[in-house]
Amino acid sequence: MESERGASGAPRSADLPARGAGGDDPGGGVPFPGSGSGSSPLLPTDVLSLDEDEDDLEVFSKTSRGEFDSSEFEVRRRYQDFLWLKGKLEESHPTLIIPPLPEKFIVKGMVERFNDDFIETRRKALHKFLNRIADHPTLTFNEDFKVFLTAEAWDLSSHKKQGPGLLSRMGQTVKAVASSMRGVKNRPEEFMEMNNFIEIFSQKINLIDKISQRIYKEEREYFDEMKEYGPIHILWSASEEDLVDILKGIASCIDKCRKATERRMSGLSEALLPVVHEYVLYSEMLMGVMKRRDQIQAELDSKIEALTSKKGDPHLLTEEIGRLEDKVECANNALKADWERWKQNMQNDIKSAFTDMAEENIHYYEQCLATWESFLTSQTELHLEEDSEDKL
Image 1 (cartoon, rainbow, N blue to C red):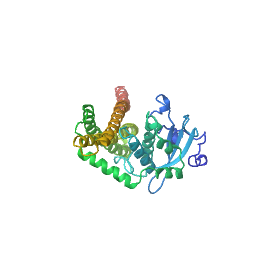
Image 2: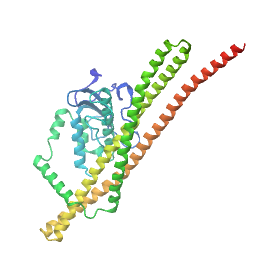
Image 3: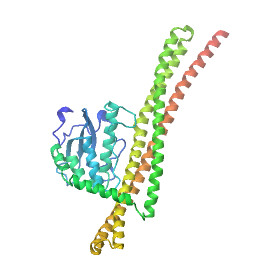
């Protein structure tokens, strides 16, 4: 792969694998937008190396859209670049549901920072983040997203410096805090229901996340114990001449069940846990979206109150109210449309994750049951043969 890497922003060699290490699909089951739901500029994201502070990621994108200068791009990005992109998307589209980023250091205690499992877990999560953006009917055309996918490192740094300065951003933050302190007097009923749904969803998905983590931990402990049981029975057989075959047979069954348990743990950590935890992060994102929507409405409410109380120039306030009414309407319409889209995706993702896990569990127990039944049957047949020989 080293010989095939191009300079940052250069088109990628056509014979470089389009999947992750080992040919797996690092998207974690996220469909590419080009596979039926839109036009995707993306192919999988690969983690290349890791330094003391952050991941150094290779982002390979492929598109047929006319606004791109080339059909393929390969760029290097760091975790802070993903944070910048997420922030710019929230700034440009305050009431759209932006996909969440994985945590920088720890993924719910599953893996330690910088080990192979952590790198792979984050790589898949970042790949999913990019492809969810690419799959979004609005976010996929965002100019900052295009820059993120195509700009060379120095060009991206220059682009980051553009926009409002520090004092301007501080002023916006103070304004947002003031709006949130005032609160919303007349939040529409549909958004009240939406907010209630988010609160209940957050409680339930966080509980599911904790239970799933506990199940994984208990499964890990069970697996570690099974690794010891097999060798113990082998050692035991060396001191029990009459039980050698039986003890070795038990050790073999334990080893087969151990391998099946390992496969089930892999399915749990790769299929269920990431999906559940992503929606834990989504629940936090949704609360932020609702807060930004309320801030826009609170700003409108304050202008209406000022006009009613005659605390300003009526002409200017009327113009400002008209502008804010349009802004609130656009924000509400964007959120309502994105909300239905998000709910459908959420239901499909969670249903698929739990269905796959249920099928995996059924297969696991069938394997273990068949292993022990086969052993017991062989022992029963052996005893029957010994009884027949004794009678003769």
